Image 1 (tube, rainbow, N blue to C red):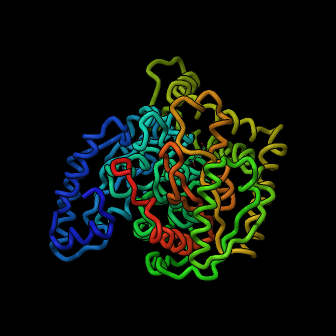
Image 2 (image 1 turned 45 degrees about the horizontal axis):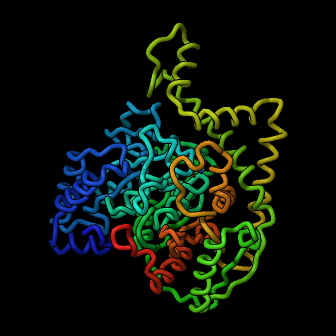
Image 3 (image 1 turned 90 degrees about the vertical axis):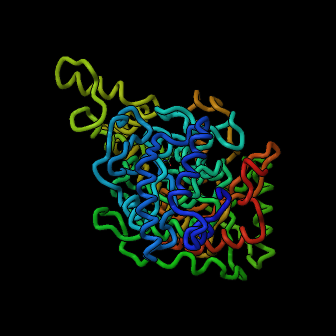
Length: 483
Ligand code: GLN
């Protein structure tokens, strides 16, 4: 049952091969049996089974869609009515959301079942899931290694087949990098494609939610439900949502794939390089043409991001003050003392580091030198992509500079950790859609992802290009159990 695609599960439910209650029970049991992976922060069996029973009624009445009755895992960054929404932080350990994020609401309206809330780096800040208040998540391919982050719990849950599919969010790589580390298909949509309402904000101008699945076909189904204009999110775009499954099979003859020379330079790990190039050769066989392109400012993306993202985070996280909701320190003398102790105790080290960097970059004396400068660089990075897309239809390259690393390997060196997103961050800065799909295994039998970058709101093209690859390769079908 856990090997089935979303469409196969929908067929099974439609044919009465199994009920949603049975399916949900099955995945809840797998979650319980694989507790050591620590993929979930909150699992509420009763709520899940109740939702499944409701879905069974819809199915019996013939009133169902493709996701009706299918259990899904959601990153613990999405507010879920009546369930704890912690964002991986002690600050929100006691926070029961009073409403659903739009993403959750859409999945509920589609009749899907919430299996649980997945573990993540605290406030989505990290690349290894090691900053979570709830402890590290183990990579199902090698339990001595990280699953990537910040959507590490969602990635581990889908890779270990504890959930058929999951949601994640990506501010600088948090869907694509863990997808790469765990052998999954992960898609970060264009900025504005998916509503951010009820999704706890890290860096509002970069955050986007997207699907983490075992195939492009499944990603198309998930994205269909997630996408669309939402008047409650002022950055949500009112552009039509295409049928993401319609173009999956489209022929790739004549497709121009851009290879950024800056990504394929001598700094690129040789194993990652040969796997990535191997995947591109596969595309050539399908009639695609490889063209060299340049993204001359891409080396500025990490420093630019680490000014802008912390600046936005320092502002967004000011709401966690112990007054309205969330953690409050036990003892304090006056209001100021309460604020200070609450924030000192409630936030972890990485979050505090970001708040300090961001506050500094936004302070009166340094605003022009750091924040404003970074905004200008952001524009240059985005212009690079605009020029590149004059020469190609999609851009391809590595997702991450390496495969899953060991616990503790990068925790003492924040910059080494930040560099994990060197190939993904520019995509968020430009607001473009990006995707990672499994393209091989390294010599240690760890998954390697190929990144595809598309034009604004052209998620259909990315899904099409990814799906065609998955029709001629089987990397996406491997799992830690059968590899
Ligand atoms: N790893 C990056 C960071 O720590 C990106 C995180 C994300 O995409 N949420 O900020």
